[in-house]
Length: 243
Image (cartoon, rainbow, N blue to C red; front, side, top):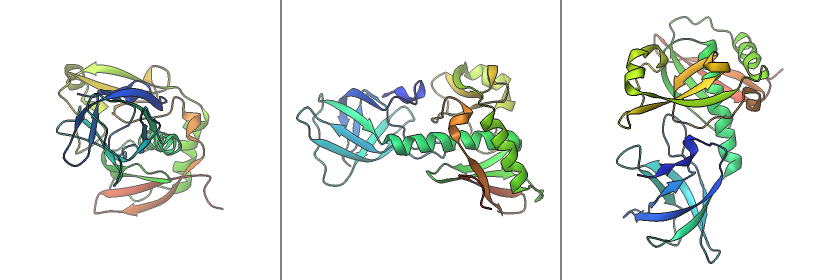
């Protein structure tokens, strides 16, 4: 099991770690990492590892292994392989990660202004999408953008807390996804909360987010698409809406 440092501190961009395993596909397993592994619609981190002699191992993707607790770092083709037991300094591509943190937070904000079951989501560096079980096609891009930006500019705090599996079972309304359940097996569930005491939003999520809504910056709904009889796709983009 790899200690996932990003779960408690999404702003930690570098750390020392020890190689604990090497896979046949070149994947590197460490005792701990700041690299987020692809999950929940958020892409895995990229970046590089620095060896003691100064050479670099460029990381092209981060994925989970046999379980969510196993994090595997996939090097670019042609990179040198470290040795088991070797100490490396990890560096994520912070510029990319921070954009994903802002975008993932924006997705949570959209789920506040559109309180419907989520049927799918994908977080991107410049555009994200969230799909809702929503039969009505009357959603207005300008109105939704204004509501989202009101939450952004209010600068609500964002924090995480943990509950037990039993506590989640007792509060099923916390789960917004219609078809994907929070990962279990650790005996506890991570909640991402927006607002004092989570008053704006509280939902299970394992991704990375900013620490206050103002950090999201300008966002807008760029497009609303009909995807089936009762499915609507909302695309979030950075920047103010086009004039």
